[in-house]
Amino acid sequence: MTDSPVLLIVEDNARNLKLARDVLAHVGYGTLEARTAEDGIALARSQRPDMILMDIQLPGMDGLEALAELRADPATAPIPVVAFTAFAMKDDRERFLAAGFHGYLEKPLNVREFPGQVADLLASANAEAQT
Ligand code: MN
Image 1: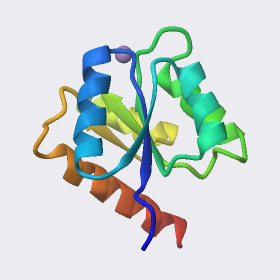
Image 2: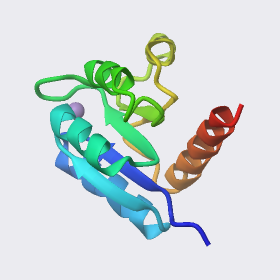
Image 3: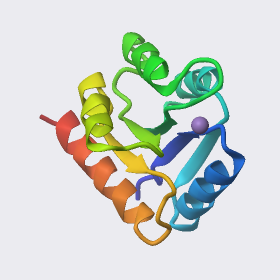
Image 4: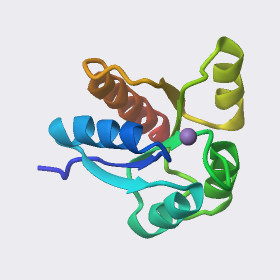
């Protein structure tokens, strides 16, 4: 019996944060929350979540800067980070993947599809980590 994966949600919009947290908790994931990239990075360092859902547009440091900082720290570099974004045009998606995001999730999130999308992203991140 292994523990449930823990997901860190970094999102400044209270409604988006609550919805993501509630859906993930409902299907059995552990959740951590931050409203800024700075707080998210601190939580990632102290709690080592299994995956991070990272908003791009944040007050202060943005999601792309946060990704770079997480990657630069050996303690957080292995944690897969998924862009959690409202503006996922094709160019944006390619830009996020090129920047090192493991994938992306679009907002507004689809409550029915979200748990499966997260499970797929966790599974593919684990598969990559083992090769
Ligand atoms: Mn935002």
